[in-house]
Picture: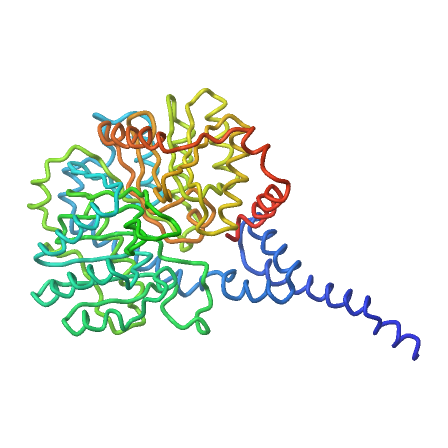
Length: 497
């Protein structure tokens, strides 16, 4: 008996028992929630290799959103879509859902897909202005806030309490003081350092601010750090809207020593696309305030969507505002990217700070390049998240080896999330070309069908090439073995990054 006790208390047996128990716990933890195979195996690897640390990471970053929250989001979305459809029948009858004129076959098919998958109406007569520099974007935003008459709705992943954050907050406070309805929705995790106290005076003046539902409570009570409101939306008086990649913070003005110049892409929109942007904001706001004392937002009234003012926009851009997030398995933005890539005939140019595509997007890029399409991707020259950057380098190498041209932007940090193809279709928004944007974050993109806008975005991409280094097989071959190992290891963790 004593021999058996000594045998099972031997250090090697203790380690083996702990490892086996941890493995069983890891399998039970990962497989009890429905998720794709790649993510399942990635988390299983983390939990197995890091017995204690791995489970701690999973507690805060691996758990899925509760069914209650998903139900709340879907219910809110359906309520808003039904309300808009009933209130704005004349608008949708006037502007055909799938236009036959001045739209390519590829464009009509993509419009139909978004209409079926996300109830994303095609809106016409939009005026679009492109911003690639933070200084110009924030000057325009501040000017529009100061001229607001009825309401300002702001939704950002990052609303940092620094110089530009305080400047925008002051403009919002002044707007609230003169009677403008101000609502601010922000992601608590993305707005690191920003608390409710930052918006206290705004609320004293009659404005409202709240953190998005995925991170609106204490970490102990809601330990799900993996799901963020990554959207960047501004709607002012139902007439002016902003959507793109810029957040609110000094680093987006190029004031960060680490990143230097910040290269991003953002759109200022006037026109009927504001209906969909307003609807998206109201869904996120009302979902978040279901359990708070903040007043709900009913956007079906004319004050929020003044049609007469929008009809004076006289633009030429057709736009669909498309959303995706963990509350839906449709992954509509990713599938929109896939469709554009797969159907490109001449070229498809992509800018993304994170290049961690899943297998479906990866194969679409390679097939398109092998079929003779000019496929080019631009990524940053530096990391803001080290594991993400190493995984980006791994996929960049793999794509280069398979005929895709990949460029490294050297003039600061590239944060733009743009896709443009064949001078007809483009997308600008918050969604990166990675697992997180495809499945974990709440994202919003403007898919645009306009020759001039597409050509302008193409010209911007080609101009950015002047500040780029093309990544070749020789470039990657000259990297150290240690760096290659870090890239390969980071790639294994891609679904969790």
